[in-house]
Length: 219
Image (cartoon, rainbow, N blue to C red; front, side, top):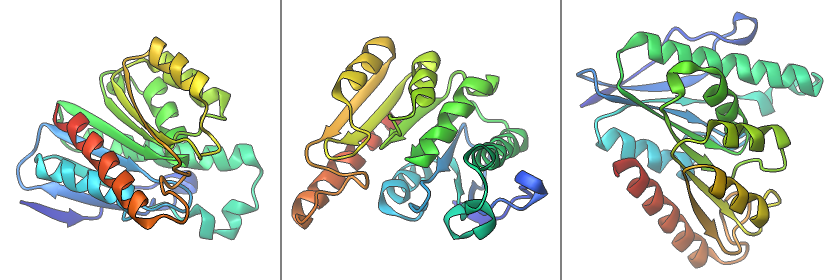
């Protein structure tokens, strides 16, 4: 059984980082950190269902709910400062959960912008060297992120659609060769992993994605 809590979690400029923490009654072996996209929240399907899978295995789950796209002060900043804001927030979140309870395993699940945060955390935080990683629609146009994924090189699942502007088959093949990564490529799916104009195919794609995530988490 778990309860929903709010943690003492502050980030950039000591401002609170919006989040939801699902805490199991007994300290579990595993925790998951959800890192959403700019406009894709932790309550949307690609993160909601993985969170439920993690909870069903008995894990704690921290879902970040950053609201950058609704903040004029954030959007007015130059790119480098916006990046620093994001990385400060997610680093603080990571430290907060790892200092709160003693976990044996951590899983990071990121969507779009959240994959940038994952790349940073996995290559800078020693406690995450053995983490599991699920990359949902990773921002592969970012050379820095691709370098971080290959540098980290641990067990991960990468999910992307062929209609996503970040899709690059040659780059995915290279990442797969250099890392211990599983790839799920959805034909015709866009950056939301939906297939434009075809609801039934979109639902079938979602089922396939969630099935792959469940298999990865429970393996």
